[in-house]
Image (cartoon, rainbow, N blue to C red):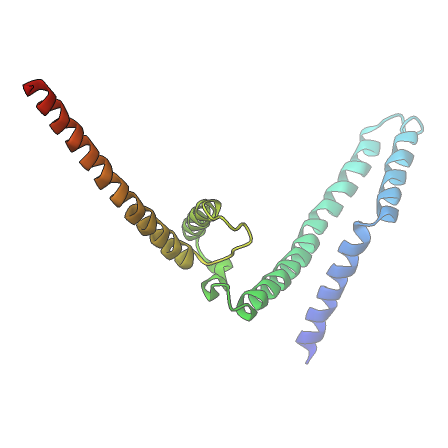
Length: 177
C-alpha cells in the first residue's frame, strides 16, 4: 500500500507545482528575485560569485522543473487521449480504428494524416458542408458520384458523336453535289 501513496504524493506534488509555477504570483516572485539580484550587483562588485548565484539557482530550478512539468504533461496527455477515445467509441459515425492511435509509429501517423487529407479533398467536393463521414464512406460516396457523372456524360458524348458524324456526312454530301 505504500507504493500507491508515494505515487499519488508525487502526482499531487507535480500537479500543485506546475499549477503554481504557471500562476501570475510565481512570475512576479521570479521577476522580483531577478530584480533584487540585479540591484545587488554593485554591492557584490558584479563578482563571479554574484553571477554564480543566479546561474546555479536558475539551472537547478530549470533542471527540476523539466521533470515535474513533463510528469504533469504526460498525465494531462493521457487524460485527453482517454477522453478522445471515449468520444470516438461513443459516436456511431466515427471510426473505432482511431482509438489508441497514439501508439502508432511516426510513419503510420503520417499515412493516417494522408488519409485525412484525402478525406478533406473528398469533403470539399460535397455539396453539403455539414456532411460527415469516414474515409471509407467518403471514397464510396465519391465513387458513386463519379459513376453518376460518367453515366450522365455518356449520353451527351454519344449525342455529340452522332452530331459530328452527321456533320461529316453532311460535309461529304455537300462536296459531292
